[in-house]
Amino acid sequence: MRKAIIAGNWKMNKTPAEAAALVNDLKPLVKDASCDVVVCVPAVDIAAVKAAAEGSNIHVGAENVHWAASGAYTGELSAEMLVAAGVEYVIIGHSERRQYFAETDETVNKRAKAALAGGLKPIICVGESLTQREQGVTEELIRMQVKIALNGVTADELKNVVIAYEPIWAIGTGKTATADQAEEVCAAIRKVVGELYGADAAKALTVQYGGSMNPKNAEELLSKPDVDGGLIGGASLKADQFAVIVEAATKG
Ligand code: 13P
Image 1: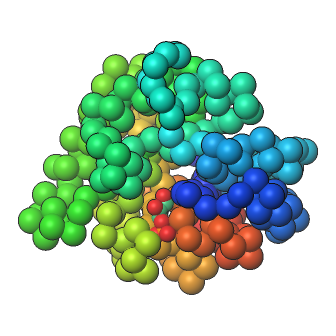
Image 2 (image 1 turned 90 degrees about the vertical axis):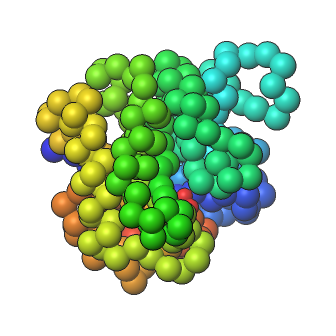
């Protein structure tokens, strides 16, 4: 039905030489994966990672994309530029971009639409803060983030969308959501997508969990029916750890 996707989010780590070395270490470890394996890497590493990953089952992603086709947007990258560099996936709306770079639900929507129009597969990140969880508004907030992110996205385009549930309080903190918490929100994401696009589209959607996923907790998280993969930060920087998570998805 739907394929699990394990994606690394390298964030602001690795020089091109270090990136190539990591991919070279990773290749033999994940070559038999039955899930899709993606590494989302800093823009300067894309060429080195593409070259290292050539002929392997490792797909390459970027960490952001701008909504305009070109123009005076210093420091930004267009979908066309990323596609030309061999990029297939792109993370959009990561909580670090929302927190430090003024990303909003509206700019997430603009970036997602531009990514899709340009032929990229967006991994759209949503997630609540600890305060919002404690206030009991997690589901409402996630529903709103998903609805705004997908505003104007066609049913055909949705086939290329991945949604990642990343509770902000679990990112880089070592505090993972329980498998039940992850399942509850991933199921809520599938439900709202079902309301917008119908049951078949919801069933086909890949929903990832992200936030301190590691070799120890991956199998339990990935065993949940609505958790179709993971977006991995810290553990994606270590080939052996990332490979164990890929293996867990292969089993799950
Ligand atoms: P960690 O796995 O380091 O918690 O990061 C998760 C994340 O932000 C992935 O996008």
